[in-house]
Image 1 (tube, one colour):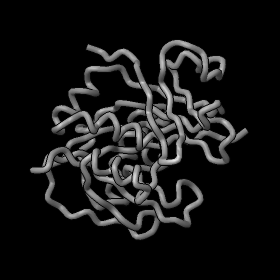
Image 2: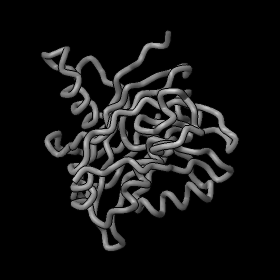
Image 3: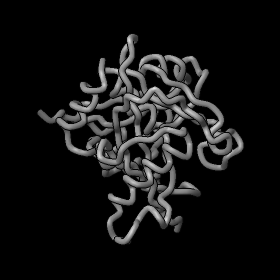
Length: 226
């Protein structure tokens, strides 16, 4: 059985004249896991992230998010600004599996991003809509958690609006199920009518991603919190 390693990532937001921007980093193409993918700053939890309490994984995840942002992008984000908004676990069958705490934070620093040149070889600040357009044009690659988060953020105009959106809803805890259908590969998430049985044709609520020629497409009609 593949061990599930705890990890953390942070979505960094800033407001600019052209609207809300998000920091994306490109992982080196030769990395075994997610090589060449555009991601948010993040990585595995280290032993030092736990401090004096080995059982407080949430606190360790926060420290890891801050540390990884500093190591990968050269930016300092205050731990108290991190808002926990989703949790993704790598599906069964993968050679490497992670349980990842997703945080979001707005920053107002003017510091330049400095990638580490090892795991990360490029960066870009981008509006969510521009990043999604680049993905759709196949000029950048990303995994579903990044794609879905950007899809949600594309509905927001400011960092405050994005933070308010995530404050208004429960934290999503996601363990994807990969299935095949007549329309091609499909990933089901909790809340989808077909999730329990692995049946994408089952009528009812939809919470899933479809893989088509131009990449992933997200479908969700989960009720939003008020």
